[in-house]
Every structure is written in structure tokens, then in C-alpha cells.
Length: 583
Image (cartoon, rainbow, N blue to C red; front, side):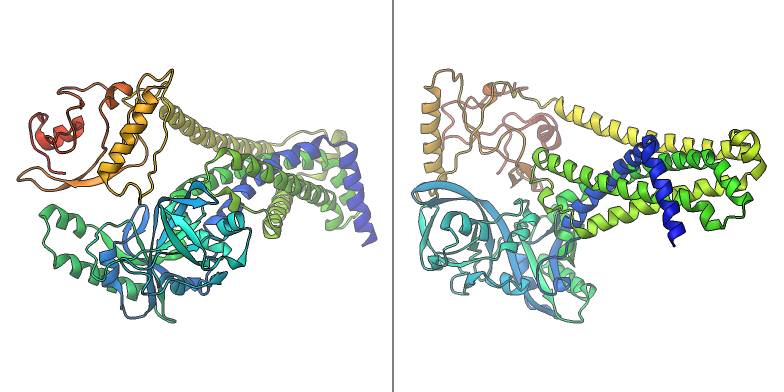
């Protein structure tokens, strides 16, 4: 054992005395490890991390499945209640940020609606307080609210005596009945709420809801021993029966016939938007790691050939196999450990940079934690890769005759086999690097195209703001329109303002889809925006034909609309002026 330790120390001392090879090999491998570890930590903290609910494997999302995940409507949810093999079922949805008043200061906070069955279904126990009652979770029920944990800590100082106090939401006092646990915000990831939920209100659905909007999600807890397939069959049967009993246009029936109604693990619904991005990151990181491994293989092969003379002398003196390969393995161990440590540091630094560069609504980078398991994985990858590369070099070195190594002090150069192996490694390296460059090039090209896309409007010298009227003070569209007009008049009077206009939505970004149809035609969904006069000139948008809105186009007057070219071509054959559309 002492001889082995002496051999290892001798090899390490030689590497440290001339650290060029050590630094080069460590740097090459560390780059691959750093990229892989950073992405793995992110995937583990998001896609692979178990949900913080008891027996989370029994939780499923039920309803209509789309590319964006599971969706359901209040109407469908009520028809799914009472399925066999389901212990309980609840419904949840996100809401536009609510206006709240804290200490006389107005602010907007992320808001979620849940029914009184959701928390028991998830197995969530409040930090303190109670859940909504059935009486509170109905139309015109008592105004009550549950607070998110971070919101409670930030704005109430973690005071447990807040139960029974009032929080003004949309101009109406709501009684605080409970505080949710710290981990509950994870559910907000399903609705892209960056994992933060400040205010939770009851859904207050009517007993027989006819709301068919699929912006909700139904969560069910399976009974022990019940499989997802059995519940999926019930979901499909009940959904088909519901829509078959309703009178609707043929186009809508055909659309529903193509939809997929089923049950799916709740775990798979987390981070649906970010899933594709993370998997692309992982593929790119693995490609970088493969390139690093090929580079390391080349370096270790050169290192072993350079040591060929030393190995031949050892064999000539009758050294055991372990004594012959120990220097190479010692080098590999040192390189693997050093590369793992440097790789973890690179991963930590890259994640820290990305936290400031990537929107939390896209990927929750705070979920990536470099814990002990991640570091152990980095160490295993680093040491294993280095040992395999060293083994490849030793194997090639031993296949050469000892006389080849001893002749002229081992300066016999590469044999034909070594040259072929070297060429294979180089070709592999170039192929992987080319693939990575192609992917990077396509990504950069996509970014360039996105940055220089023809949006159809001018975004120069444009400033935007969002107006969120308190619902109790502005209960209908007429009052909101009056407020918007007052704000616009004040803005137009400001120095340096050329134009001020209003819209329900910006030209790009969040969309509002509404059902529409033409007389005698099938209904369809189209994006809808309400705008004020002057909107098109302010954004530099020119009409192909017709006129823009003017001050005479007011509520109660002649109903007019402006449609885009695609809708005009699709519905009216390109001739839409003077035609009718029902919204």
C-alpha cells in the first residue's frame, strides 16, 4: 500500500511540477462538466423534483389536454365530480393581478382562485387558519381570502394575529381566514405565475355552471391502487357525453371530437412552458460534454504515448500490471477531481449569471440548487471520464511493442494504428463540434430573426403603461372607458407627448380570443382588441382600405369594426368592407 501511495504521489508531483498538461486537461473536462451540471441542477429542481404534497403520485390533472398542458372548464369540472376511484377533486385557476390596499398603499398582487375542495385534494395544510367553507365558495358568499406565505411575511411581518383582519381587494374588504404554507406557490408554475401566489380567493362557481372556458385546471386524487388509465377512461366518457348532449355548431362539434380528454400526472404539468427549453439546454450541454470527453481522450492518448518508455522499462524490470498503469490512473484521478471542482464552480457562476438574464416567467432558475447529490454526480462524471480516457491511452500504449518504446528513448512516434485512432478521435471531435456550432448558429439566427422581425407597426418612441381600475369603483365597461378617456386627456396635455391612445391589449403579447361568426356561417375564434381613436396612427399602422376609428364611433352608436387581412381573406374572400361580423 505504501508503494502504491508513493507511486501516486510521484505521479501527482510530476504533474504539479509541469502543470501545463494538468491545467489543459482539467479545463477541457471542466467545461463539459460545468455545462452538464448546471442544466442537470436546473432540470432536477424543476422537472424532476417531487411535488411537495403527500402521496403526490396519486395526484392527476383531468380534463382536455393541449400542448400547453391540461385545461378544463367549470362546466366540465362539475360533470367530472363523483368519478369512481377518485377520492376528491378540486379546481383552480389564475386570475389577473388583483388591486389590494396595504397600509394605505395600493399595489397589484398575483391572485389565484381555488374551490373549497382543492386544498384537501392536494393534502395541503395551512400554516395557520382554515380553508374556505362550502358556504364561502359560492356566488355572493362572504368575502374571505387566504394569503400566500411570502406575502404574509413581507406585509404583515409574520404576525399570526392577522386572522379576522380585513384586506381590501378591488375596493372591497375581505376577511383573512388563513395563511398558506411556503411551498404552495409551486402550483402557480402551472399558470406561469413565477411560483408566487399572494392572494387566494374562492372560485364561487354556481351549482350548474355553463362556463365552458378552459382556463381552469381540475386536480384529482386517486384512491390507493387505482391507475390513471381507469380514471382517464371515465374522464373521456363523461366529457363526450356532456358535449354530445349540447346543441352547438358543427364546426365546434368537429373541433371537440379532435380533442383529447384524459387524466395525466400532476407532476408532468409543472413547468410545461419551460420543459422544451430545458430539454434543449440539456441536449446542448451533453454535446459539450461529449466534445470535452473526446478532447480528453486525445490528450490522455498523447500522455500515455509520451510515457511509453517509462512503461516499457517497468515491464522489462518485471513490474506488476498495477505498477505499470498506476501513474496514468493517478493522473486521471487528479484530473477528474480537479475538473469536477472547477466544473461545479463554473456551473454555480453560470446559474448566477442566468438568474439575472433569464425571465423568471420562462424558467425558474432559483429552483436550481447545487446540493450534495449534484456535486457527487459531477465528481463521478469527472473521475469516470478521466479514468476511461486514461485506460484508452494505456491500452494503446501496451499494444505497442516494448522495443518500439525503448528504441531511441521511446521517440518512435505514432504507429499506423495510433494514427488511425487519433484520426477517429479528431473526426469525432470535429463532427460533434460542427453539430454544436450548427445548433448554436440556428439559435442565433432565430434570435436575430426575432429581433428584426417585421411587426407591422413601429415601436420607436413608444411608452406603455397598464391601467388596472378597482372593480368596485369601475364596475362596468362604460365606467372604465370614461376613466381611460380622462387619463388620455391628461397625458395628451403633457410636454413631449405627441399622441396618447388606449387598448385592451398591445399589438403583440397577451391575447384575448372571442367567439365570432358571420351571418349564415360557422362560428370561429379570433383575437379581439378594443382600441381608442388614433391607435393606428400612433403605432404607424396603415389601413389597406376603409377608415380608422374616429370620435364619432362611440358606445351606443353604429357598431363598427376593423379586421386584419387574414380574417378578411379567410371569411370574406378579401372583400370585407360593409360586411357584417357578430362578436
